[in-house]
Length: 351
Image (cartoon, rainbow, N blue to C red):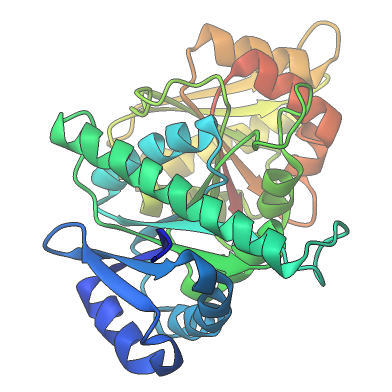
């Protein structure tokens, strides 16, 4: 009697054909089931899942390197929490606006990579459950597509071994997606930990832009009406702004360019004047508002929080390098508090 089939990947027809050719040792275990005209589920019987996944890990790494030039994709790490689906919904809508595809990524830890030692049987159970979870997620996605609640975006799914933050950072460095989209809470995070440790690690070290989606945000809220670009006037601000325009410049939004200071400084006004001149010359079609914000209490966070609420900011954009603005505004304790109050997605660029 055959055991149930487990989904271990969702690939394009072309990738499935490459897998058939290159993963010869697993030929007898693999089954390919059509999802639609362009995608296939790669399945294996439960008792062979661990054996085939180990072979798939090598193939995935090789495939990642081969596809390194394909940057028109959004990388979405998932953990199959209820919030993962919400993050996927945001990603699908954004992919339509950016004319991009989607890569879903699930990672698991081997005994050598985790403080918690898992036996092979336990890892197999994790992989079997992930197969069931991706089937459920895929069913929900296609149901919403059929009901016109989500755009019909091409996507793929794969499993990789390793620590989640390391796998995500490594994959982003290799395939260079246009964006990594992550939730600010994972399935294992506690109530008070609004920015999960994995997301925080990826934000700090990833080589491509990272969009962090607060758990409380509604998936339907993906239109960028009011965008806040927060700066400390460092010498990389204009580089980060150019990167932002390359990513979302074709979308329709009002830009709020703001510097948050604990006290007034005449030199900041001079810097802001220079920024105004630069934007007026290079981006004359963008509706822009310029501000230097401070709170009477001297608390930068309070001024930031107040500004976000008053102007109904739908996206906060930050530039980070060598822990400058990110360290000043978003050390872990302040980040949790800010995200809780603002409930606003954060897009971080690295320069």
